[in-house]
Length: 105
Image (cartoon, rainbow, N blue to C red):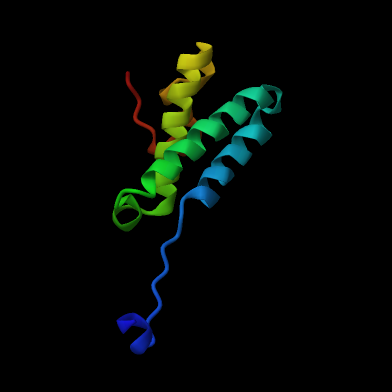
């Protein structure tokens, strides 16, 4: 009531949009893994739903929460399938531009 009384609106953006964007890029890059992407979508959406009961939306930008959901979904999918495609370092290499990556040599 107070916020509407002073004509103030509060918006909290959710990470679903960025998460779907990440998955869309992965699906475009490797369309042959359709079933795997569906599994990751399920795990990622569960992660994002859990974040609704926390204050993460107030502490982190939606893109960072979405990337955390992507990494968690990859780990869960890797546990389920054993597929090395979902190693976290592969996802980080995909997400970061080459100039931002640290060379382990």
